[in-house]
Image 1 (cartoon, rainbow, N blue to C red):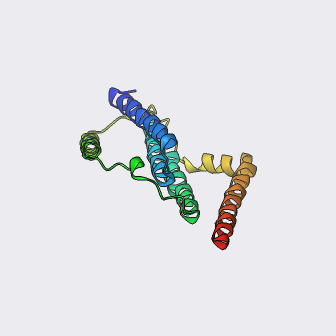
Image 2: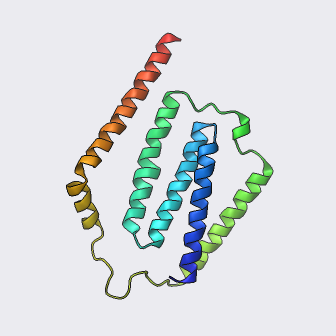
Image 3: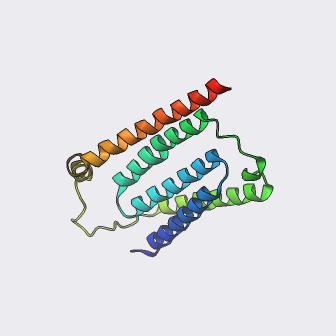
Length: 171
């Protein structure tokens, strides 16, 4: 693997681990959910670096998109989003560090866009259709797990609505 790939693999891996650590230490559920989104985006970047672009796109669409919308919907439905100011990042140092990290990532994006990077696959071994093997595995061998997961998510939403209705009726 070229040095640039290795560097970015470790960079996104470290960011994912740091974001996951911050995710489990937040008191505010909304802040924790946003750190989980950062973790999911870093995992998607790792998939793209491993030439699994379809899995990376699914990671962003399904987990960082749909699942996080469900999480935030449940958090707001249960009115858990009221965090204190100690859990929010309002300091100037954090803003400067965030701006610096954004500039570094922008510079890396410009460097990567200006050069043609080699593929991880040797010549001639690039898969033609990446969707077909994933779809076949998902809807043949793993169909039961796929459907059970959808039922569990539906049950979680129904449970959150029931809990929210019960607390609003009592008040």
